[in-house]
Amino acid sequence: MNEFELIARYFSRPPRDTGFVAQAGGDDCALLSLGDRQLAVTTDLLVEGRHFLPDVDPAALGHKVLAVNLSDLAAAGATPRCFFLALALPRVEPAWLDAFSAGLYALADTHACVLAGGDTTRAAPVAQGQGPRTVCITAVGEVPAGLAHGRAGARPGDDLWVSGTLGDAALALAHLLGQVELAPAALAQVRPRLERPPPRVALGVALRGLATACIDVSDGLAGDAAHIAARSGVQLEIDTAALPVGAVLGAQPERLRLRCALAGGDDYELLFTAPPQRRAQVQDAARAAGVAVSRMGRIRAGLGVRLLDAAGQPLSAGWRGYDHFDPDPATEATDP
Ligand code: ADP
Ligand code: MG
Image (cartoon, rainbow, N blue to C red):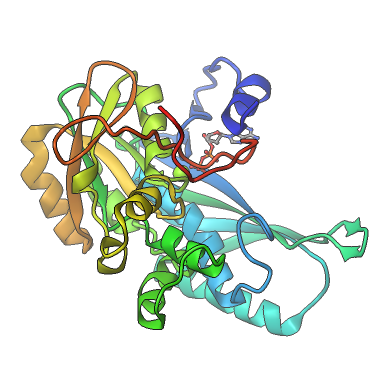
């Protein structure tokens, strides 16, 4: 059973019309109706040893744990308002907490997002000491009713777009794990994308009324594209030669480049769809938000994700996103 099958089997029920919960699980945020406005709510849990390395810079971690939640708000097109912080820590470490809270507040202040509460506990005892640090944030944003974008609205004929660049975080992680070796200058360029990803909040808001579907790319483009495909009941066709990558990743061998851009994870870019008639408006929205967007595919009738090479032929290797309960949690290619 993988992560998504687990959620579908144990934590999904047919929607119940309460008049309040307009959108429950399945998208990046739940939507709660309050008259002419909706609250977008999301929660993300980061566990030491799974989502971050034990020796990660605590200021970067403070940034990242909030950033991944603001990225989900961005996917919905919501303006961040407040967040809650739950912590399980093995011990009190003032220097670590100083840096963590400084990183957290720096990003929160950038988005006028207020820490509204939380919970703090000691990590559970394990064989030699205390368990890993665990950090959970629940973030709340606001969007005018009817203008949020979810994963379900993509239609055949729509263009497929992605913001920024893909794969730098995965490349930096591969270096830190000793799988590839980057020169110091190259590492300095890609490492911030792993440690301090910029959530695309302004773009998410600018795409209100333009994007038909949107998701933030957190688990690898191929896997997250499949979520739009499944929820919208369409096929996403991706021109892999048109995937935006930075200079450092662009200089890597093709297989590594594709692995990082398609299956890497931790990109926190927005993958979205919009009708072709809206191309100029999408570009204007991106310019206003200060982030580049690339048109790298299209929506077709059908299901799933189809990856094409530069000649428009299907890629020979399949790529999938990260799954926490996959027995082989690979960011590797699988046989088609
Ligand atoms: P994201 O990567 O955007 O944080 P996830 O892939 O973690 O989203 O989750 C997919 C969907 O499943 C989301 O709508 C989320 O709210 C829902 N979900 C995840 N875990 C649970 C759970 N334990 N109970 C109910 N819904 C869940
Ligand atoms: Mg998400």
